[in-house]
Image (cartoon, rainbow, N blue to C red; front, side, top):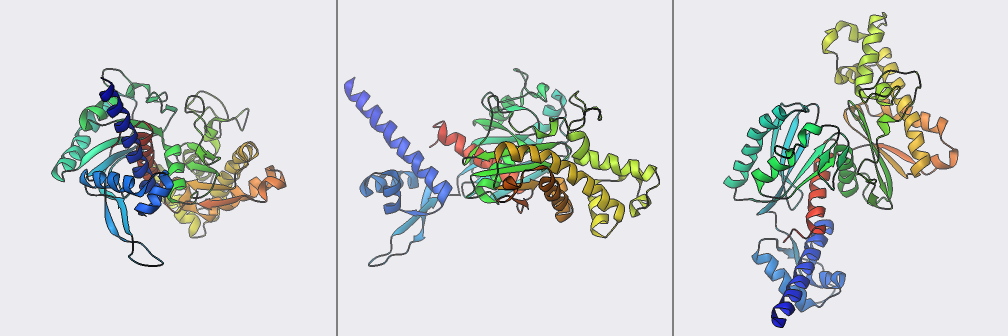
Length: 403
């Protein structure tokens, strides 16, 4: 009985070291055995044995040699991208994107589905078929799905896997989490889409190496996520960052949340289109007046603004100014070193960034603005997808789900 307990402790220690090796290779890329031994505070023979076991299990593999000042060049090891994968589902109001990522953070399969997020069990029924297609693709390629990540809009409690904004996706007998775990036989994690976006930026984009960053996601709603002291800010229930529902105008429009004058009603993509249509009905001169009124969308407005249309530029400037006014509150609260603009309105680039900067200059104390940069995301939609993948990997490692 005592021998079994000793072996159990030894196995637990070995598995922890293996996870630490996987974590280091995932975060930092290829490493030599000597580097791994130093980072893990263990001996080179111990690391060598562990890496050999991980190689056999197809978690790691050799990727050439590293630099050496003298003598033989040391072997480099990295995560093996050939066997283990994660599945990411980006579910939003426009469509659904289903992605298979390998351990090298590469997209190896993508399926775009023309399905709009709807708070109903019908949505889950329709989603099942494309998810089954992903299952079949993984089986054909002999891939093993180790985890599933879902990026969704709304108030999401990641610890409990619940979306409070879309409650019909949470039903115990027929929930989104249950469906994914049933199909993939793997742990499933839900995450707010804007938080997934900032994780992608922090791991791969403009927030890399930064400790205090805000990401503003300007889509049909407005989301905010924060990296503070190098960590994702979740809040007590995972709700931190609902900038879109702070009140900007006391006697403003009714928001879909039931409140009045929310930033969402004044500065979202939806608000932009409403402003544009109202202006055209008032007789404002614009090339947009030549478009099918009901089909006017954000891309049309941005295209005309880039072509010099004064009305379209005015509309984007108004939206940017309102966004900057709302963001000035977040700047005073969190004192970020960088704000990254994501979402559909990020396509307007300087036409949205400049009025945001001017509003922050106007409404923020100067000392807050001195060391703050405002940037347009370079990753685009990949920030959210890669961030959800990174969230899955870190959750699996933290919860000792692998190897």
